[in-house]
Length: 83
Image (tube, rainbow, N blue to C red):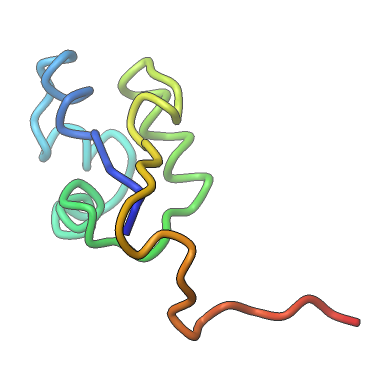
């Protein structure tokens, strides 16, 4: 997937552990780990907002788009707009 999650970089800048961030934003350490490793399929805006607030950063500081192999290809899960 061409979306790179740089949450660990922002956490290091703030000297914050996964446990501390998970507690501050109200999600489990397991779910934070899934997000941190880039294995998440989606992220709620409310979670993204809480992360940015806790780390004092912008969404672009933790999410990056890097086009590469597979970019633009459909995985079969695209939704059609209502006609």
